[in-house]
Amino acid sequence: MAANWIRFGTPLVSWKIEGTYSYLRLNEYKSQGTTDGVTETSVEGSSPQHQVLFRSTWDLPRAFEFDPTIRYVSALPAQNTHAYWTMDLHVGWHTGKNLELALVGQNLLQPRHSEFGTVNEIQRGVYAKATQRWGMAK
Image (cartoon, rainbow, N blue to C red; front, top):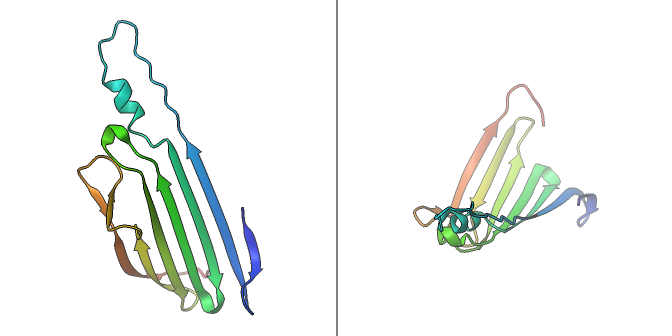
């Protein structure tokens, strides 16, 4: 779904909204005669059954951009990983033809979360970014 040239106050802005949903169902079956009782449960419980993503991109007046992304991933029972929602945010400013300054936040809805297993957790992050492009205009 996309919407372009939506009126936002007095100036016109370009606004795009995207959404995706995926559903995964794995059905593992044991081969006849196997004694492996772990693989089936481990494989089926190591991939998220549901994933949702909403992304919005706004090109605002004066060369500013505002781009939030929200994601949901369902639990991974075999990895002892809980379901989570998270949000990333990009706020950028194109100062001229080839330079962009941006403030970016990742995983903003909680200080940290596991994505696979319990060994490493993904932490919230905020950083500034400058991008210089040579030889091409936006």
